[in-house]
Length: 209
Image 1 (cartoon, helix red, strand yellow):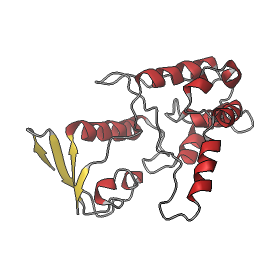
Image 2 (cartoon, helix red, strand yellow):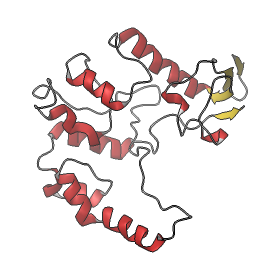
Image 3 (cartoon, one colour):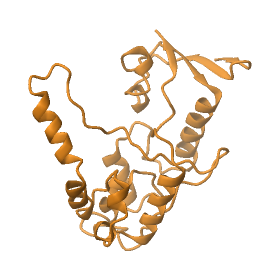
C-alpha cells in the first residue's frame, strides 16, 4: 500500500481472491466493470478510513457469523433472530424487523439516525435503486408512462401506506402516509432527509487494471 499525502490518497492492489460485495457496482464503475483480484486501486484517505472502520466494527464487535459479503436478507435474519444489537439498513425494509411473524425482536426494535462520525451524522438518503428506460427500447413512450405512474404522488402514497417509503416529500407530509409508521422511524427518516448525502457508500474509486 502506498500513500500520497499531497493527494490524500492511498493506492493498493486487491488480493487475488477478492470477491466481496465491494466488487459490485458502483464501486467498480471507474473501470466499467466490477473490481477483480489484482486490480490496482487508488482511493481517498477518507474512503479507505471508512472501509477500515466498517471492517473493524464487523470483525471486532459483530456476531461471529457476520461477514462483509452478506446481502441484506442474511444480515436482516441475524438481527431479527436477536443475534445483533443493531443493524444499519434502508427504511424501506423496516417491516422485516417489526413484523412479529418474521422477527423475534418486533416488540423491542427501535429506530434512530446513524451515529455521528468525524464529519458528523451523515446518513445516506438516496439508495442505489432507480427506474430507467433502456436507450435501445422499442417501446420508450410506454416505458416512460409506466415510470410516471409508478412515481406519481397517488401511487407512492399507496406504496407508503403499505410500508414502502417513498421519495416524495409531499407524500411524507401527508398524515395518511405515515400514520402507521413508528414515531422513532419517522424522526430518523426526517434526520436523513435534512442531513443525508446522495449516495449509500463511498463514491467510486479511481481504479486501473
